[in-house]
Image (cartoon, rainbow, N blue to C red; front, top):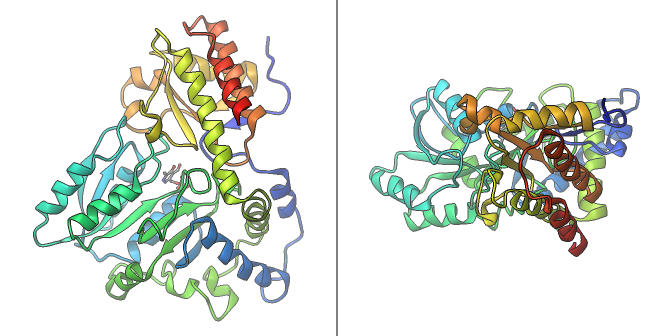
Length: 399
Ligand SMILES: Cc1ncc(COP(=O)(O)O)c(C=O)c1O
């Protein structure tokens, strides 16, 4: 018997739930791409995109996914043979490094493993060992969507400064922009990449590369830059088509406009961060309670190092897979599969699942996921402390 018929809930860590208003804004005939409403609207999107990242610097928009943003970041700052430092904390920064290596960039990799954040002492050692200051950029994710770890970008900046190292600081915020707090300028980030499909509540297909003047100076000598990916013409373009080097992603832009209105002008960015923080704490309260005396545990132990966008949970070997299947087939909720190092063994792959709580999500949606997980554990006889749902409700009650 299934109880899944009804509105299905895709609770994976991106693409996230899109507000009906975003979808409705996209449901329209093709607009004129030369004059009128669309070009006017895009000029207004740029300041809001900067505000959501807390920056006064530049943002270049691309018709691309996150991988496109990664490539754009690299081609605008690097030449073949340049050296970068990759700080792996799960899957995604390592993936950015694999792309860089394929482009002829030399990658020095520190892999902190799939259950840890960046250890700043080891970064300091790597910077100190770089006597000739060959490292041109240090690449990190603020949140790794596979492990659900949140890295301390402020501490990473401080580590670079303490080492008096001139490398650029690149931050991948694809998982967490508009979910976890981030201040590009105040935190000293030189370049940040993100995409439309997670905290920005818009379909996949737009990517954004933010860069400051120091990163733009690297563009002067970047040997890898190509006309399409060049960020310069995309910033304050004299002609509208240069924003996208061709036809604009017309309907995405209407969706994005609405999403930014909701985040920046209706709810407010600080309130959006607060909502995500509370929903995340409810998920953690449930997971931590379920695990009392049993095998269930969040992949990241320290709450301060967990993301407000996604939580990766170990339910015990075999149980993650069974629970995910039960959730899809019986409860109408699809959860995220395990990715990266935690899924490298068959045992890991069957133990973990990821709960997305990013974007257009509220208390009843998250409580629905938690309650359904608890029902699923009951149905599958996975040992757990049944106080988990109550613990989550208490967090929600406190707000
Ligand atoms: C942190 C992070 N970086 C990069 C990517 C890659 O983005 P995309 O799949 O849109 O290419 C993802 C995708 O989930 C991600 O979570």
